[in-house]
Length: 288
Image 1 (cartoon, rainbow, N blue to C red):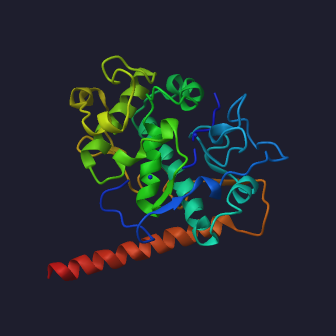
Image 2: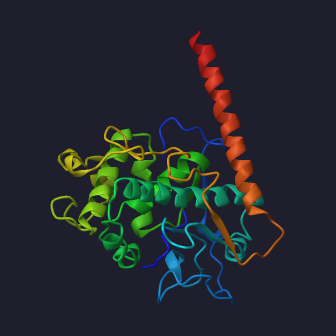
Image 3: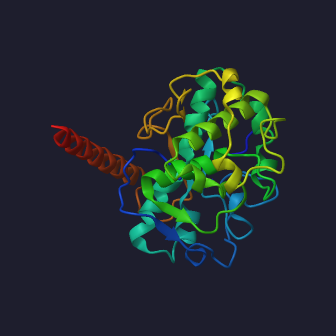
């Protein structure tokens, strides 16, 4: 989720190997506390609602764009630990990584905007209204962020709805769907609105029309760069943003335990890079 200043918790990438084996489903009962928390949001992401989680949950992860004083990925640690208190401890760390990775995809999109000199403000003024809608779905960026994170962690959330619910078509290994979704997101930024005439299907996006969607004629409007290749769409690399995943500022709010989330992020990156090098070595040996 993007922080609303002037934005989501939880994911896919072709060729990226996960740290775990298979996919893990986080059930509704594992992360849906009955009572509202007795402390406030560290940031007023939405003026009248408690972020994207609904009335019982506060915001957990959000991204603030480059150029803002508090730029980076933000986490409400106390709310994270409250929500997942009933979850299997073995996968809580993966849920943490999933949240950071989701927000890092927003940084990749933000990096494309900055490097291509694309105005972000017009679209972001419409973000709050669009992200809270259930239907019709015009926004794809949040579902693509879900797919980006899922590609690394294997974490799926059964309760996802609205603009977060279309991650599956982006996470089934079909590069063409990722590219077409990227064309949509880029043109929404260029046009400064989500419901772009002749770009968005009548009635919005759904699982079926995403698979058949084609936007090749819209590619000519897109300024391509290291964050957005014409043949692939938005990058799915942890080092493709202006800031790489290891160095992007991570702001922890409402510390509630002795958990060092900065060290946990370092562990994830080290483990991922070690696994990646090992797999590359194996592939080279197989080619000999």
